[in-house]
Length: 300
Image (cartoon, rainbow, N blue to C red; front, side, top):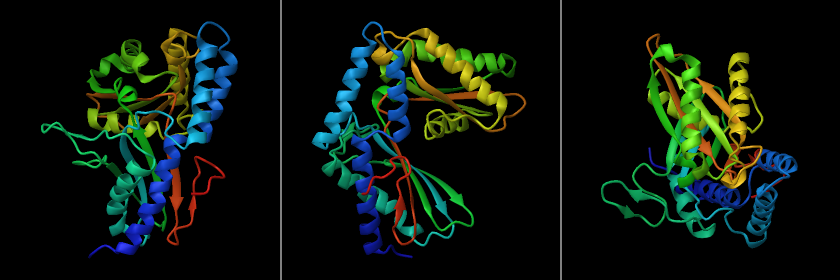
């Protein structure tokens, strides 16, 4: 079955506008959390750093430019209804949207082919944009998340398998070891995503999906929610502060996602988002109407 070129053009235009807006405008929950943290940080360099962040967001909006020069590698997380009529057109539309947004936003050219060490110049390369697929039975809509995974915020990421005897304390230790070593490179205050599973690749994937959850949300499992709060409190006590210049708060929050594990393994993955957490989500209907739910009131 061949793609409908008109559908690809229409869908790619919508998604390109979606990318361009999210490059220069942080989601509502992130802006709210940063404003709350600014009220708490009243000592040292912290107030000045938050002033710079606020000015940065204002200038990005005024000038129509990305809020950070590192616009990352494009990543899509697509929850596709089995009744969505344009399944064949989604992937080519997303690829075309990245090419368009690279010029229109503009996005920095960040896609470098592994082994060949060649920058493609349009943010499209082997398996990039990365697309994570999830089918949703009984739905006719496309729920699409876009995330700009910058170099700094990707640097602290890791995944490893622990001996089960290390337990959940071992997971916390691994997170703290990584954040105290590389957290400053992720332009704090960070959002920390943690995946817990039976194998490294599942834990890593869940840690990235955890970053798609709203700041301030909690895992439905009470024990996991308590672990989120405990790790957040502990990381804040480390005192990285905004920009790594010291302060009372180091993270916007901690989000944990989990999958059942094997009795003999306990895997942990961690992903981090910088203060300019450019995560965007919208739901697209078959008639191309949409709900840009991370940026309420915005018309593309």
